Length: 128
Ligand SMILES: [Zn+2]
Image (cartoon, rainbow, N blue to C red; front, side):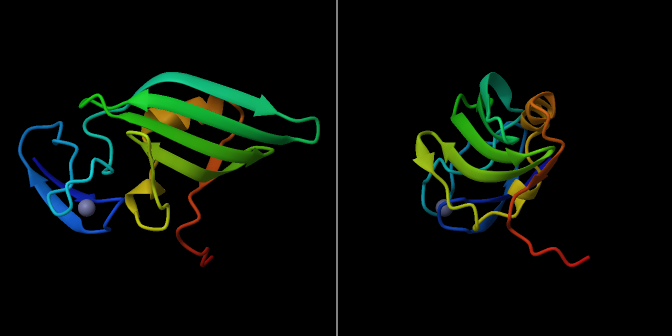
């Protein structure tokens, strides 16, 4: 299989050819801040909600290379926005990566459980 991946750290696009999961490391800069290898398994999630309808959800998971991923989403009603992502303890610049447009399905379903049905990643301006 061929995967097109983007490093969260240096922003380079690269292809990985081979059996999944991919090695979880950028070939250009060596950073582990690349998209989840294989599927992400959610270990834990925390949901906080204030009386005025604002909420925060943190989802922790491990990918198939045992790299920890931590997603932080700020919500209002049923809409949310990805505000932070840490991979292997390193904060990621959310503006770098377009693959974040699609949150891993396991993360998305945790958010739906917390009442957040639509998540913006803030990467693209809405054109519609
Ligand atoms: Zn890189």
